[in-house]
Amino acid sequence: MTRIVLLVLALLLSGCGNGRKPPAGVLGDPEAGKLALSQYACQACHIIPGVTGSRIYVGRPLDDLGRRRFIAGTLPNDQANLVRWIRDPQSVDPHTAMPNMGVSEKDALDMSAYLLGR
View 1: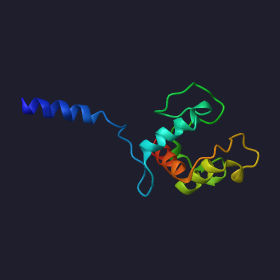
View 2: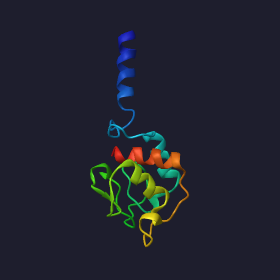
View 3: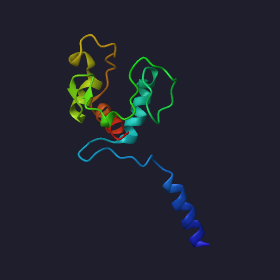
């Protein structure tokens, strides 16, 4: 009986999370980042893997963000630049349609950890 309980528990736990982790050196909590992306309503303009939202094509889809070379077409893709872009997009591109949502430093760090691990 104990073996069956352990097997069931192992199977249940194996379904937790998405199995993806941010690259080495990336700071922040990806699960908190996923929640923050939803709380700031990022899915209103972007398609974000793992975040429920409309199939809207206002902003770029955010899948495979960790594999892109640039953020906003100009910034080298690293966590510091992604955090900068999330917190103050107009400082990078004054003409961007992406609004400044007042994202905190911690939330931006967590959001970047989630997005870079996708």
